[in-house]
Image (tube, rainbow, N blue to C red; front, top):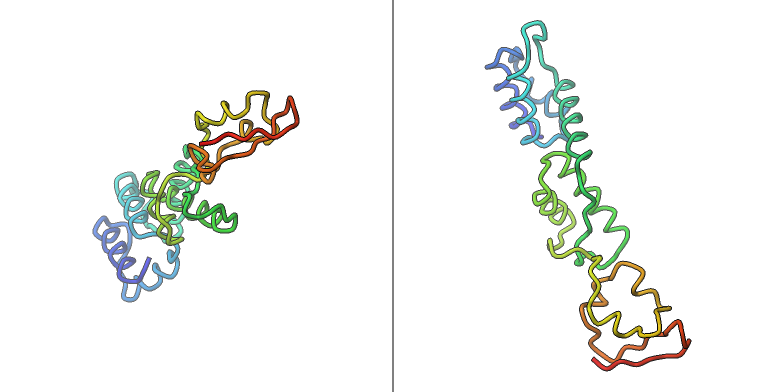
Length: 184
């Protein structure tokens, strides 16, 4: 949150009688809430304005931060595990950074589509299909008449394996221990 946004937040809370507006207060709030997105702080402030009782008079940046933390926890507790997009090319360092950005955005918004867009924007990648799918291409079981020792039927399928093998593909069968070649 920048100083202008923090000043707007203080103004809203002041109008509700929850913060005495003082000169320079926006800068202090911006410093205290620099890692909190303005949109998230506004949602939290509106909730505080609606639920605050007269015996809980003043709101501080710490109150906003605590409410944002509680909101993030609620969102993240209900979050399904997303798969990184294929455009990360299976790079584990970038996938971890993407997951962190996704979790942060999901915690703030509770919206999977918005979290996907935010995480992809943070890493400058396209929000495309996940890198891993549990759906097996129909061609794979047909290539392994005697069983599979290469492991492609017992693990998630990587995007590079595709829905069909583009060139003659060699697989080792468990039963014979020999190589079978299947033309696409």
